Image (tube, helix red, strand yellow):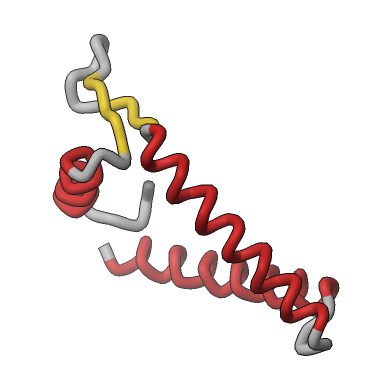
Length: 93
């Protein structure tokens, strides 16, 4: 939300629904809005990705590639960069 044009979100959501990863339902009050949630298939994929990230984080720590505090520092830097880009995009339009 906030990063994509509406048509891109609609297209991506449609493809995820067609593939069985998401369920969507139009809001009864505002027909422009939809409620979305993961299906069981979508939750399975989400779990696999979460486990993959956890394994990667553990490997980084075990091999002393990056410590948990360094990883947190990097995440904070990336959040600040994302915030900066978001602000830049707001001023373009």
